[in-house]
Image 1 (cartoon, rainbow, N blue to C red):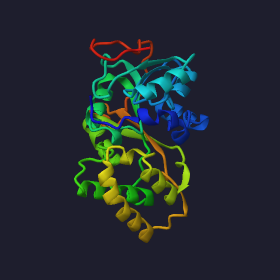
Image 2 (image 1 turned 90 degrees about the vertical axis):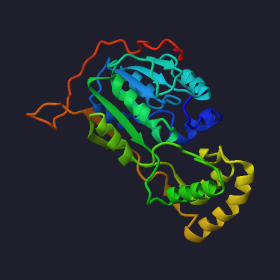
Image 3 (image 1 turned 30 degrees about the vertical axis):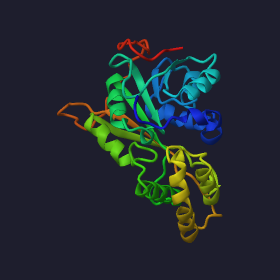
Image 4 (image 1 turned 180 degrees about the vertical axis):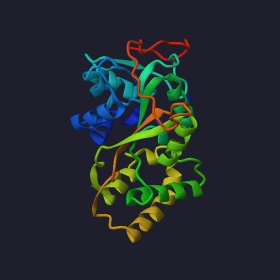
Length: 292
């Protein structure tokens, strides 16, 4: 199993924090930017409770939702009842699908949570059809945002106390995602700004962190928390206005990636052909995942 954050313990609260499904206007923007069409085959890697998979299925896509956390899968199955969503339990770094099986591959708010993020991108590229798109959503904030600075100070203190990779063992920035996809022959073709995250205060953010409501402290031993939290809270009080409401993150953004044509005449053009009619879930590695 990949080293990743498992949200099973928080599955019941997940939709309250991240939204039940994408808003209609956000789906509209993605639909046009990525070139979705009715009948398109879509793979949602790390689908969670179906926030992205379900609205795409409602609009006529044939969606495979892949999710490794059993608690999240239970929520997803309940929400997706009656939709054209096949739920598969499995890891994004070892996809049980044939090459070229999907018109679109969705990777939303995932890559910073798992150490095998590069393997996930390679697998996403492998199962992507010619002319297809990869959609990546970044929702982890930017370095200059105050809540991100709080988070990274907590990381520094936990690591200083001997906790290796206390949280979010995956990619640290969108720039790294761009670079790895470019190595795979995929270039950023469009961006969709989907608004901002929930409004809350830094004090409320700290409360959630201290009480283990956020994944940042799930892997940190109680003894380390007892040692680090007083210093962390004092540092936070000195540097920030903890009562000021802030959007966390300040901006939620989707990036659409397409494969570059290997043509000497138009080296920077994108493949935009659409291929439909494939069966979405051809199992080629018989072992592990189970579909429902």
